[in-house]
Length: 178
Image (cartoon, rainbow, N blue to C red; front, side, top):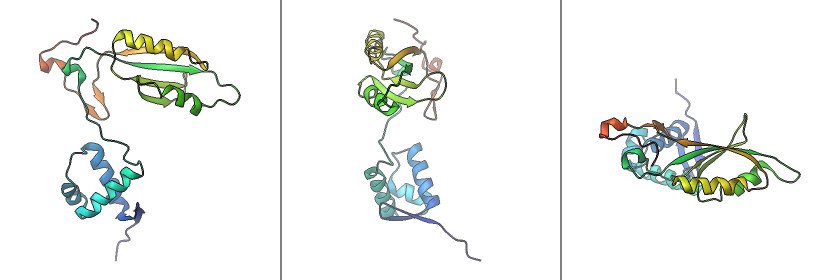
């Protein structure tokens, strides 16, 4: 009995659904792998993998490539903050409108609309404590922002699936304040 194979055509490239899922999972784990290596892993040809990746980039399925850096080990003495933001919506203003205002700030690394006791959660880029304070003042001045609660990230143990090694392994001590 023949097994039916489902195919999805995305960006003009024909790959079966499992290959598509595997390709994205592999790239999420290690985007540095060569297309030939990926092709062997998912049992596809190299040209198809290259074309599929290009289509994903064009259609923003692959939105970027980032290097994970353990800044605690790099010892740059900068901090990140997680900021809970509460907002008051009024006629004609949506969460999307407020998000578009907030994510325009260079200090914002990530921004999420949340359910629960606050409306947005944002993660700042690594900044000095003074720069974090100045940014929070700007954020609080936005008309729709009713409250902020700031949490300083003291140590990162796991981020985007990557477990950072214990800082003691590097002969250092965690810096709490300067």
